[in-house]
Length: 312
Image (cartoon, rainbow, N blue to C red; front, side):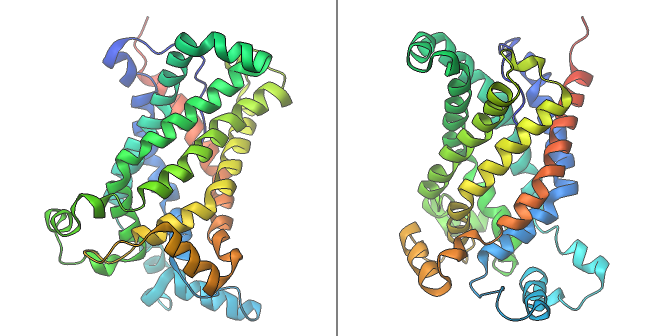
């Protein structure tokens, strides 16, 4: 994920918001699902699996991974396998679009509010790095609030990793069976993941622009500098949060109506059965997918933002 610059003041009312980052993020998020949803599905299935897929020879490891990722479609034709990587696309599109709008349009608003309320304190505390820290903290705060979208994320994860439990059940039946607590399973671990994750995402991008490229005005970054900065922020965020993402995924992929499990229980069982390395499951496909995903997300978001901006 890329962190678009938030140095412009939020304004223009609701219409201005949706003619800016929100509208652009809506279109970019939809297209992003079309291209990158398979990578997310692969990562989620690897995270959910409790076997040691790295055991044995290269051929055995490949066979293990093939079975984990494609399940009963492991021996199917390539086209069938590709289609099997797009489960729950409706949930995924809805979740991703709302997530993109919330994160990319929300972070600049929080950053502006922080500048107006605690700006002097930030400057006194962090000096010349106050802008970078404000970007990071605003991202962290917006990341924590992202838990409001957790029910959609739960449905997306279930469709990717435990699709059998969704069969023959309507959305109303799922909600009735799960209840409020069930749909928000994993809230604590999600907040614990999102706070440092969004801090690293926005902070890593700001750090690269500020320290590596020496930019005083982040808006003056070139296309290449924006891509580099966003890549650093995203890869750092993915690596730091992957252990918590593994735990969150396993909490969310339980059968509909089954008893909730705590993050500590999942962590204990994981470490005992798979060792600490189990917390890094799925990190490779996520990181490998991040570079092209970043280029695409940033380019399309900025392109659509200019395309739908009101003419002056």
